[in-house]
Structures are given as structure tokens and as C-alpha cells.
Image (tube, rainbow, N blue to C red; front, side, top):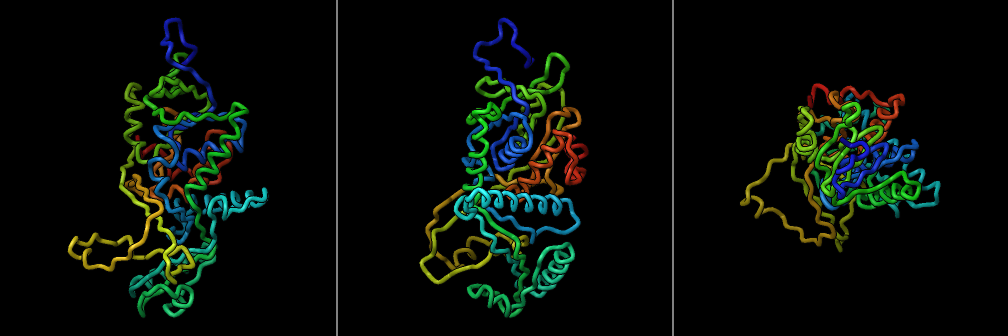
Length: 377
């Protein structure tokens, strides 16, 4: 019962009412809050067991906003492309305010390079460049000689090559998250935004009037009533969290999200002439096999000082697609999770999609591939 407390209710329980309550303060949750605040008149509360960037995959993100790994015609392509457009609008808005995107969020539109080292990878990259060009992106194929001219510090051998997308970009994740949260906080004086950090959600609650799930209870006995929607955006914890939140609701939902440990090291500038001009990735990294300790000990050792050492649980979803949308048995409870290491690049598109669903707006993307039904219940 999350309505007005009856006589005898626990004095320690604090009741709050918002239009939207979001569980999870990573890049997805914060972006969803931002979209509601900027594009509607709804009030938003955000709940998290810790604080932004203190744990989870967001704090270990490398900030690539790249299309070079995506395949045209797929659902992920549409979501990533829309998100990239929204990120461009994000930095354009900063410039309109006289704020440097480079200084504020580390925005660098240097393009991305996908490097191949074998004949097989060369053929794959030629096909990828053709696909990307046909999909309307500027894409270039670099031969081994062209690659040496563009990235002279890379050594890939005579069979090496690369695909290049000049419009791909990169941001500094910590700065971007801090700026998004700062924008959200501006709405606190207008009674439209609140943060409940270090206060984990412990259960969902039904209304005693109509039985609708419309509130979140936290560990500190805050009862957060949501008039329009509850959004669960808890990253790799979403699966286990949903089991706990819904355990007393007679609802079965299995979110197919599993954690996968990820690490990020950011090094201080190396005092040498080594320089890469673009965001650079290796085409064959997905086939990487862990080498033995013996082999690793014989590999080249480059000593550098790490300025950031972050780790987080990346997501693994069986079909590789995020879960975005309402839960059929709880239609005002939405999931936004499963971005599998691409949360930064798909955050703004996910936020727009969730907000449009809740607000009843026309959708810019087909939500069917990301639906909860058939995948989680």
C-alpha cells in the first residue's frame, strides 16, 4: 500500500510522490531522467545503491560513440545511429551556450579506425566499408600504405588495412556523466528532480486502490510513488534486482542479463613520440583468446602510469540486444538494460525511446526488437 499512510504506519517511512521513479544512476538512468526533465513537465526521482560512477559499467566506459562496429539494417544500428545524432545535438547545444565540448565532456570527433591484420580481416573490412557507405555514412577503406600515412605509429604488416569512419567520436565518460547530472540537479529548485543515492531499492509496491505497481521502497524506508512510470535501469544488476523487487508481487520475470567483468585503464601521456590520431580498434579482438601465463610473460612489456583504474560489470545478453520497454504484467514498469558495453553510445537513444513510450509520443525507432515480452516473460 503506497497511498496516504494509515494511522499506525511506521513513523520512519517517508512518502514522496513523483511522476517518474528511476532505479539506477548509471549513464542510462541519468540520461532517461534528463530527457524527461528537458522534454516534458514531469518530475523525476532517481534511486541508486551507490552514487554515479562509483561502481558499475558506466565508470569503466571508454566513451566511444562509434558506428564502425554496427551492422546496417539491424535494430542495434538504428538505436546507435539515433543515439549518435542525439549526442551531436548534445554537443551542438553546448556550443550554442558558449561551452567548449572538448573542455566540458572531452568531445573529440577524430573518427574511428578498425584495423585488420590478415587477408580474411581485409576482405571483411572491405565489405564493411561498402555496407556503411550504402547506409549513408562516410566510410573509407585504407590499404596498408594508406594506414601507415594516417597512423605511422601502427605496425600491422603488409596485409594490414583499416576501415575509417570520420564522423565517429569519443567523449570522456566521467565528465559527460557529471555534466548530465549537473543539468538534472538544476531542476531540484523547481521540485521536479530528486536523488536518493546510497539508498538501494528493496521492493516494488502495489496501490491499494487499483493494484497497479506504482511505487518503489528503498532501504532507508523511502516510499517513492510514481504517478506515470517506474523505470528499472540498473545495468548488470537488473536481473537479480527484479527478482528481489517483484518477489512479493506474484509476478515472474527473468531478465536475461548477466555480468561480465570489465576493466579500464587510462594512462598518463607517455613521454615519447607515440601518438595515435584516431580512436583505434582491432578487427580481430572479438576472436581474442586468453594467452597462457607462460606466453604472457614473454610478451612485450610497456610500463606506463595509470591515472584511472576502473572496473565494472559489463552486460551479457543472449541475443545481444538491449531490453527496453514495459513489462506486460506491470505495464507502468519499464526496463532499460542490457546494452552490453554500449551503454554510452546508446544512452540518449534509449532515453528518448523510454520517454516517448511513457509520454505516448510517436516513436522514432521500432521498439519491437527490444521488447520485454517474449524475452523476459
